[in-house]
Length: 101
Image (tube, rainbow, N blue to C red; front, side, top):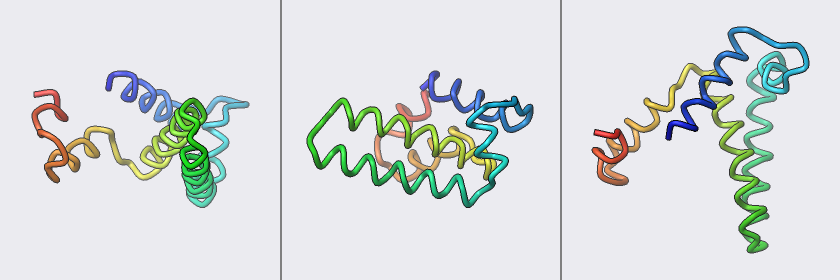
């Protein structure tokens, strides 16, 4: 989970302090429609890779999807902690293990 939080922090930093040539900054500059388009595109690629039964391709596409979801979360002001709290509240798994308590 530390890695996911670290990546979120990098994405958030790119939004707050844009860097020329950064793909993340490009997404923020293009706005919500572009970010949502990328989330949809990557979701489709996960589905296709999984359907084809290729674990390595599926893992790569899930990474791309997670990255774009983090960009979306940052754009909307949603933190990983808020997502984990939502999951814990749904009793998807033991809340203590999700929240690291």
